[in-house]
Image (tube, rainbow, N blue to C red; front, top):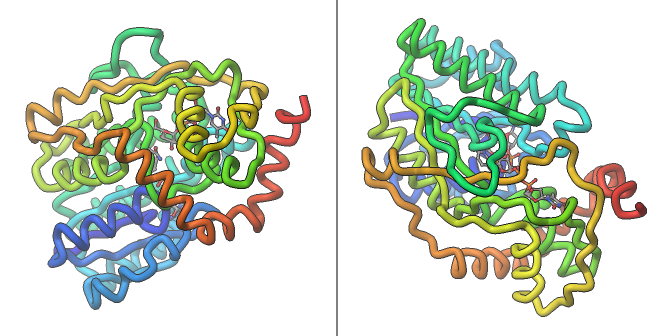
Length: 341
Ligand code: NAD
Ligand code: DAU
């Protein structure tokens, strides 16, 4: 069995590859990643050797049909798991082109290659953001209307619809998962939790958008990975599976929890200009995957967030290298105007 994992040098993809090596060491993995700013081979350091000949890394773009032909020519591929994406909402608000190119055109190129060569499974990693924003009550179910509100979520919704169209039109065995906000090790420090931990450790301001009362449903990346393997192996093609943590938190409470755990003062919190079109609340109803595949989140949030904070404390060299390079220009561009206001 050989799986083509795209975006395997990013946050969830690299956690998934490590999870797979532990749970299914017999499965071969080809990791196709373009190594954008978010891709980092250090995320897999130490694991490549363990997997021996079962693992291969290819640097390449999922939107490039020539690279895909080369990958397929060199390897018999049984299944595709598409993690590769531009994933940060704020960057999509600055400029949407790369999001359309990778998330829509790239997914289309992968679907075309998978259709041409035939695969047993094509798992598209999607997001709860395709459903839009909730009021104070209710949860997203798989049949909730798609109502994306940022260029990022619009591009992910486009990819989902292409996947479902390939299932209906060509009977390509496409499965889709839509997960809520992940946390855990190796998350790029532009996202809320690693940004707040690393800024707090450096005694820098913690930029909270708007009133900080937006709500997210946090799930440990390990629980997400377990759901993905289950859907890959036992899910029904053509279907969508919601995955969530059942763990809603207003942003400001997460930020205060991080400060408390690190023994840093709340005075580091800096309320800044809101994200345009900011989704107010996400909450996932995961009854379907629970009923049909027996999945539930297992990681207790109090324990998971403590271990995650400890990981960033211990791995300052990992995020320190990221935050010292090109990232500084990004931070100045995205936060300079907000923080000076
Ligand atoms: P990430 O930004 O950390 O990683 C994305 C990876 O994709 C990087 O390694 C990058 O180099 C690679 N990549 C980007 N463009 C590529 C291209 N054209 N060709 C090949 N590789 C390319 O993202 P993440 O947080 O790990 O998210 C992974 C997937 O999960 C995404 O599809 C995202 O939409 C989805 N998702 C994320 C979350 C979350 O909370 N992070 C929740 C639900 C769904
Ligand atoms: O819900 C799943 C999605 O979760 C994924 O599809 C996305 O790839 C992932 O990035 C994430 O999107 P969010 O926009 O919810 O995540 P982010 O970490 O960017 O922000 C979480 C919340 O924190 C959101 O309400 C915005 C807020 N925020 C974020 C940053 C970076 C702040 O208040 N300040 C910040 O500096």
